Length: 351
Length: 89
View 1 (cartoon, rainbow over the protein chains, first blue to last red):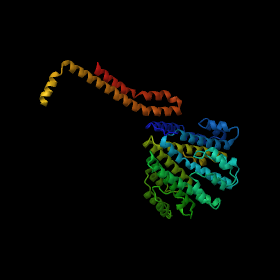
View 2 (view 1 turned 135 degrees about the vertical axis):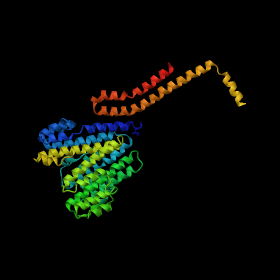
View 3 (view 1 turned 120 degrees about the vertical axis):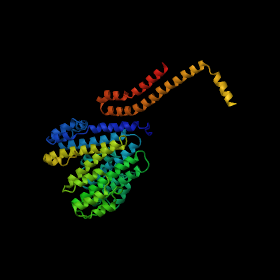
């Protein structure tokens, strides 16, 4: 297809659509209402929103939590595919590259499923075909008899060289975390290279990716601290953020929480993150810290999309907000299914 | 020599010629007024129109409102037209 031209018009068009879609996302008050509902009421509530088509289609085959889970995954995949279709010019390339993270997640899910001898139908239920690998390709991957054949089927894709090198001696469960880390490192390196290639809108994209890397690295730092892991954190650290990996390694040696935060504050440049770090001085669970980091990330994305209203930022902000809406609904449904208290479920929601 | 030529040219300008020249300048002014405001309106409506189409694609209920917002820059070209008419009549 020829490149879409026409000055700023296609950008304005798409960014406005993203803004309207963002305004249709479920607001905080509705989540609070849903906390007091049962699973069937939540299903009915979701059916009245933009998930109606998926719920109606799947209601004859699935019930209860399965229905909600699959309908949400389908909706997310459909939404992301649709966004890729309507984005113009270089924004399409940037959006596609960003959504490749779903390919990584899908590939790892299929390999894990195969290693645990899960049936294809069960693996298929948890996949989100939102990236470059479409539904048909993922179906073919699931049908492969062994994990090695799954990797072979990826020939020609960006993930293949790394996976074939890592699993040269056969696919083993203990290699999967390393593969996951390496794939995400490669993913971010590719995004940074793309943003720095001189592509139109690359500078704004680079700003967000750097921020995303910082958030991911900080999350990993707190996870390692919470686990009191003796592993070297550099395996999980993504380079090219604003905090250099050697500094991360250094401050991870600090045991005292206040001292650790002091050092981290010295390295972080983003204002919203600084404010958040100050609140982390008091004891908080890793789940609370992760939710706080997500909230800060979304707030910063919102700010970025207001500063650059017709750039990649409004699209990325919507992609992320939609993702967390799905996470919230899934957490609500799973929590209700497991008879968790409303307060406990509330702790898992990003509102 | 040059002064002499200018003097000859000046003396050759008749009242009719000056009047015609004035009418021409007025027409030129009117055309600039309408043309430049037309371009400005087009530029403004380009951005508003594309946003309006985007918003309508997502929510058909806003069509009436965005149509109104899209034509607001028409006022610019109307000002230009008024100035042009004042110049000409």
